[in-house]
Length: 191
Image 1 (tube, rainbow, N blue to C red):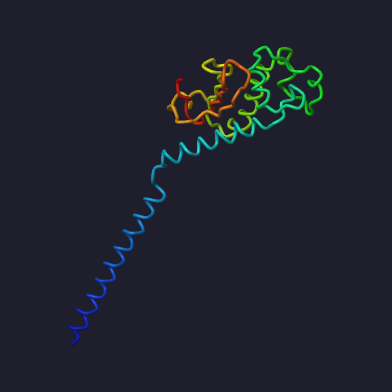
Image 2 (spheres, rainbow, N blue to C red):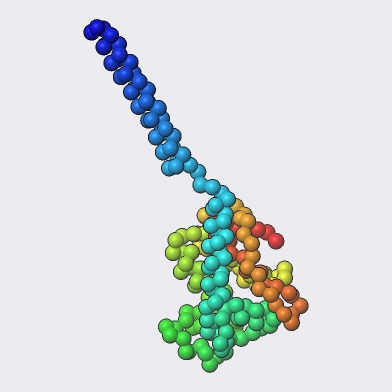
């Protein structure tokens, strides 16, 4: 009888050990799949596109301080229609705190002002997180503004992304659209 209880208890202990081993393997599998899985490239591309779109959209809605009662979107469209557009000199001293893009003598030119404003905005947003970026603004096939992050090593190591341009329609001009390409963590595609 004593031997029968020993066999039964040994069988129960072996059963518990098998359950413990199976349970441990399940936990190890869950930990490796959750914590050590590689990030999805599709999700990364989607996040980069959303970040790019959000930054450009917010920038286009800000006040331009270059022409009276215009936002950046209207300034870009006006600059696309007239490449020699100048900022209104009466508005230059009115910005508080002083706008760094309006303090240099050659920045009343709208294209130079836009370049500086985009550079300042991207440096304060993406540059704070050390994210590499490339910005291109094109009217038709002509590139009018091109900027890159100061993190050139990361930008060179990155590949071309699948970013869609932010398109602004132009009426009354030979070119029909302005394309704004902001590629975050990737190079803009060659067009």
